[in-house]
Image 1 (tube, rainbow, N blue to C red):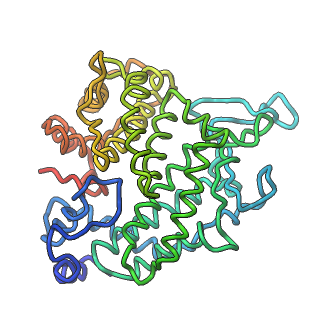
Image 2 (cartoon, rainbow, N blue to C red):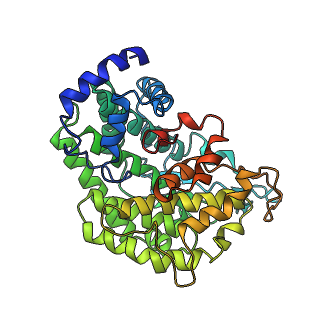
Length: 402
């Protein structure tokens, strides 16, 4: 479907599918309550602030229609378990030891990504590709009413999670294996953050004729098993204990899984505990994040951890916990953490004091959009307008700026 046709269809679909802004929204937790309805209203009204993002969404959705469903069965061989249904990936920052004939054990080179980790032997790129496509297609279907998008999204999810011949087992025991050192490690769980896009897709597919009650129950059962794994497995408990961005991403993932599977109290407990377990440990009163600044890609990891915090704060709005405006006893907050990075985006020539030999990719577009909506600081809007192509980003559908 081209954009011109979409413009003709959407007002009609909007009237047919959503008679009022008070109509029930899909069970999607990665946007705040009301966010999806407002986004669809903007698209229906042809709000010029969201047109580029909507056009980009449709372009990506049309591309995703052609994607052959990836699965964990595509890797040429299984990991240590011997079961190709088990997810397997290799640690991205570990390389063969050139001094050893077999290269073992691998050596760590922070900030230098080994291409093996993104090669055909790893499930990581397949999971990311499937999850991104499913979420894109499901959102396009929900905004336009076009069932072809929903049909493909449902197909992608079924192949990865539900069909016996291709389904992934609900564990990350062999994620980020390090040759010569381990067969999988706790830090590999950070790759499972891509699963959360599938939760969004399932929520958006509810009501589609291509997504049955059995499909929904099957996926919910899979995610419940994975939630159990995150809390009881050695690798899951390792991530829960992590003090840096891995701990933040653990909280964010488990909270989202808990909401999806109906464990609201667990979700609320995790978000509330993050005030002291995460923010008070990771963020200084000036907004710096020392554990992330220690990395070679110090700016990128500071941003990465904030992305997890912003997602966790959004989840908090569904359980009545406000992380957006919370301050620790010594004054640390999410706004200060963003403001610590902001001057180096406002002035790209300003020296980054934590340079460690790696060029820093300084951009905060998605964070600035959401922060502007939450805090109303015009600096965020002004810096955002300096970024080319930002108007086409998905976040513009939910956080438009003038």
